[in-house]
Figure 1 (cartoon, one colour):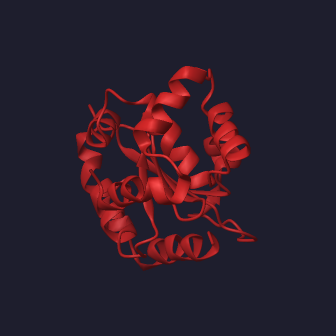
Figure 2 (cartoon, rainbow, N blue to C red):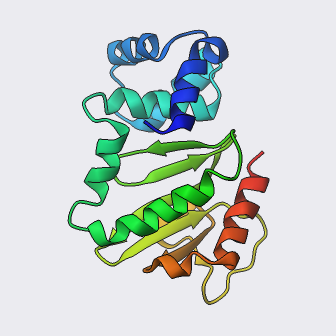
Amino acid sequence: MDQALKTMIDNMPDKTGKSLEAWKKLLKAKNFAKHGEAVKYLKTEHGVTHGFANTIVTLSKEDNLSTEGLVEGQYKGKENLVPIYDALIKFIKTLGSDVTITPKKGSVSIIRKRQFVLIKPATKTRIDLGFKLKDKPTNERLGDSGPFGTMCTHRVMISEVSEIDDELRNWIQEAYSQSV
């Protein structure tokens, strides 16, 4: 398990008033059909912050899969993209101890107080990296959000580890800085 996620789970009782297992039990009883409904419920009815609510809901739905299993599942048949994913995660972990890496079935959310980066294996040869960047103009490389819709403001398509250059790292850093 990623250290940031483990820390978040360990801190959950102090920060939210309940353990992850207690939250899972509560959500199981409610049986929400949609992820967003469960997140909204935790935020409005229990005062849980968005980051914790999203993580609780994600982990409660994917009880049978480990976070490693979720990432492995995303890259099945796309193993050539794993070095790109690993390099992105390695850099993201240098941003600060307040970063949470939350794998889901089809993507990995990178969260500070809110999601600021989204990593998604889009094709067998490409990872789409979504960003939340305020008032940032698009350019040839930093495109609009594309298929991410409102989850992100921008997108960069990455096909090789060498594309994780200073420019890309600066955009990740900028998104991190804006996510307070």
